[in-house]
Length: 598
Figure 1 (cartoon, one colour):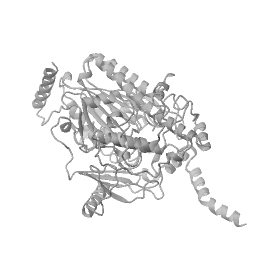
Figure 2: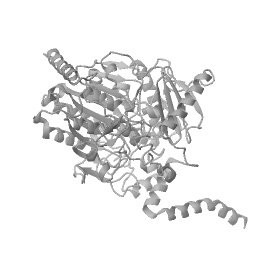
Figure 3: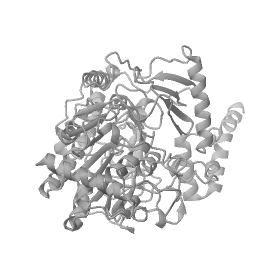
Figure 4: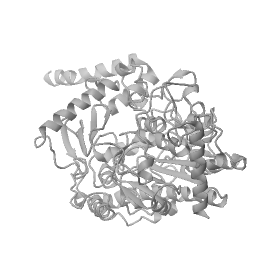
């Protein structure tokens, strides 16, 4: 019976394509193609999830829902995304490079010198069309529940970018238990529902709430027979790392051996699963501390920080399972395609010692505590340390905000339709801009032309991954095809199996390196001396990428955290106060020297 339904649906797609004169299985946005021939789509986006954080990628965290999806679909071992959140979301939802789409960085970290450029606003431009808009115009119901962070102006809300029903967080992050900000740069946690400001319920926990709303949205229109597109960008596992106690308890004691042991354990499991070569080496990050040098009390605290992190991942998986159970009960699961990935790699910005006086005072100023007993619960400000973040990214190097593989390579699972191969692993290179073209292909919807909705729009640069999913090819990027990326001076340029990469301070030295990431995903063996011609060609290719995509030079002495605080002070107190404070900081050493001399 299943094979008959598949053949019938496939035949309907072929006939519709032939009648429309299309070269492939695509319908125009206004097509009246039979709704039963088009699958539902659920796009799930984790936040700051590391490469080996889930079980299908070698993690020890219990994720049975994601493991089942991996068994039913395809895992991508060599999928890459942006190094931080908003740029990734721009590419994921439009198929266009983030610099061209107006999001070279999150708006909170853009310098005033950069904002004079039209494509350096940090919000999604009107020169791109979202996958939600295209699917809605093609007859799909479109829903979103989760973090947006692509513009909070009335015309930039997700309700104006193709999503018919929404409940969305505008900021880079927020508390998972209540409606309050996690950084002093926000006066409040800014949630919107269907274009209007929204107050969270008293019993809020982010992962549960987002799935509740998704089920509510789907259920509201399920009986009309139209397909749906549901986008669920979770807050897990973004700072603050928080989870219900029952999920935390399952990981107490699991991380008592420390980050080095966990990093090696995950490397071995990734090898066993075929994700990386057996001889993959790992570079030790300068930000990784000596576990053995810590006191017993400090080890106990660090292990629980990671237990909360693992609990938050399992809680997310549990609630995804609730959605799948609902879809099965409604009889629509078999005609639903699932995409699961992360916006970027593991987050390493948590302080080394959250129990230090300065850390506790910072948390207290935001209404949080860092107590061991209540870690991860309501009112707790928790993060994982840079040291455990190196284990989350294992066996890769670097983290979020950097262009090492640990910042860019993340899990990608696509599953759920009988058209696709099941329980397969691909090492084909894939990039964030590929998601929208793939979803459109799955839905049978054409990409936009030079104009859409009465305005000019940019063409999509991403590739359709469907041929990979159907087993028709082993790669969609050829040996000479290139993909470039830049974030605050950190840069990467991919071509075939090779990657040119530059990471700046504080962890990097701003030098260019060349790696074969198929053989050396840990980025240990620099090839620029052994392959100087390739190095020069790729360096020239990267320079062409910067010209084609409007990448601007970095302001002198730029730092991400410094710019974050400068923007906050300027917004709260005005630019004059910021200039005064900076002047005082410059003059302070001379004043101290003068006082000492006299």
